[in-house]
Length: 248
Image (tube, rainbow, N blue to C red; front, top):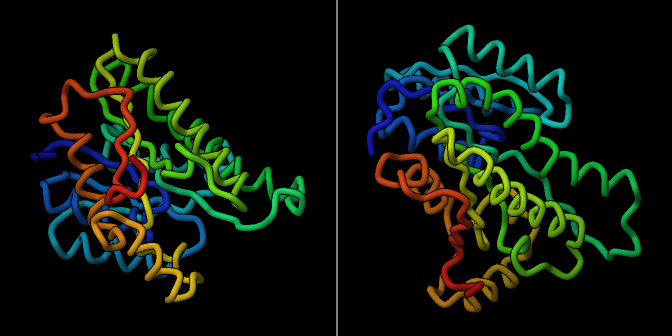
């Protein structure tokens, strides 16, 4: 994989899967990487410094992906610094756990707006240049729960299922412009989202996974990079499950 000459913008990139994606793109020659973040400023700036020390043009930009104004400002700053975004990784997301009957409207909106509306807003900003150039790649991060649903995570599952629908429809619309849109649906991954899960439950999840382990951010990042590379040039509209066989 070779991303020389490419500017990559990753949302939710201060830690976990997003941060590992930034490092993976850097290892594969990306010319510039924009680290989108919302709250984890210290981690975002530390990643920015790491990438710059490695000789990569990098910039950490704060934006709440639920806000059209903030998303537009993030892209404007990225374009001013590095030129148009060639690769967009829609990774920003949140999870909430609880019975459906206990979900309030505010919580429902927070999950749907972050996990799905944020992708809509980022795609709207990235696409004019991609369509004009007839070149671009978008990868949206969904979840295996968006494929099969999870008890006590109805709003999360619904939002991630919406991501899959968005990906497939947008891929059909953008295919004639040579802009590819794909989706990665991670399984149980060792990120901050898993931090509140008891160790014994994590062991059970690993045992329920045919490959007998939990996934890592690196597992997802390598898949994301592949889907953006020339090697995947005939792949669009696909949902790639990276879940160790948990969902087959």
